[in-house]
Length: 347
Image 1 (cartoon, one colour):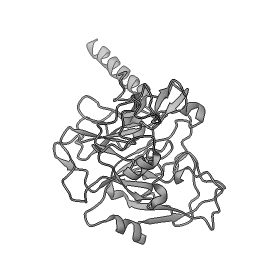
Image 2: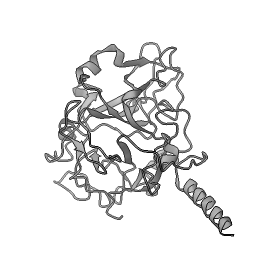
Image 3: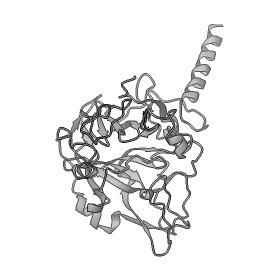
Image 4: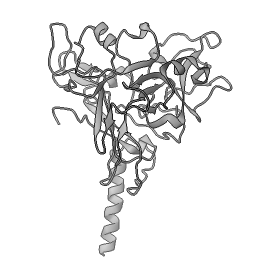
């Protein structure tokens, strides 16, 4: 009889885990608690914004990412980067013959590097510790100046570890003061002053977020100049996607004379990656299944109605913990769950 009840409890636990995950209907795999993690992980992605009571819509300048060291050794962020994929999970692209490199490379539309050179030791993450990277390192719950935006139910991001908006972008934005206490990330790609207008949309609602380790000896200049790091393609489509990669241009696309260019990052450089896509809109993987064979999302749809709904604000994608370790099956559909943002003052 005890064995019977024990079996029932195990089955119930598995069922509850399946309901709590963002596994888009896929069968839940039981995490292997004995698996030893040997790399940094993306633990949390907060991108849905906070509910602005006056605007009656989402306030989204308070996005942040949490990176955690689940191992027993020190890692360094020097020479590492965060990347957003150029391809969108919600639209299958008929890529030009010979230009589908997903099995070997991550196609980055945005690559932002942490300060420091590859092999450096200026920015350690000690065992069991985490770092936070914010879009804008600002206390978003309080007004600063007459023109600055703020949101009562947002987060205090003034003391995070890094800010992905560059100093130039923050100054050009004009709505927030530059925070000298928080180091800015360095924009590697796309390069040029035209990209200094405002902080990049690093977290795509229909793309992949990657944590990249750039090898020693590979400089920014080498990434930008060597042809081996360029992924040039086009596809059979009338319109560039406005919800995932390609910068949200949404303009008519001439397949023959308007090629799309990504940075071609070897998959061996990808330390961790998370595919994000609204639950009812997934069409294909934009990275190799060896990197991530699933997807997750705060939203069920990418429509403005959903993205500006109070129901979805204040939420994060958070990596599960099975009681012994963080879950890492290279399947975001079962590795992550939708929860309240960890930095929420309500929590």
